[in-house]
Image (cartoon, rainbow, N blue to C red; front, side, top):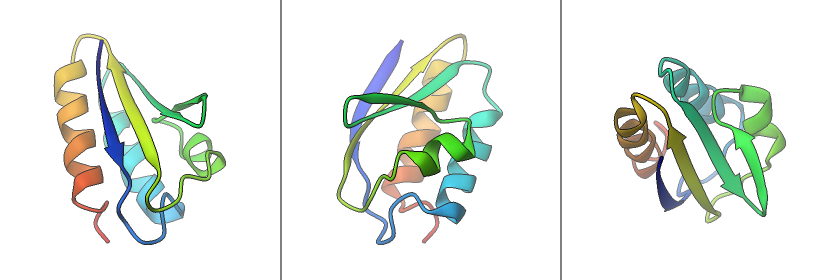
Length: 87
């Protein structure tokens, strides 16, 4: 298991488009990918789970990856979030 604390920096937070970009990117990995936010765990491969989390700009989240390709998944998750999810 690997994890990293990150701050969401894109202006609109995890709304439909960036949530879709993120969940699609994480879906290609076989490991479990979880977003921890406000004391809850959300499946990062599920668009609806990410939208339901209501993660806004400036929110502190933890991305946790657990499985055979966890390091690759975490590296891509970090890159996506730090780049503003394409916005």
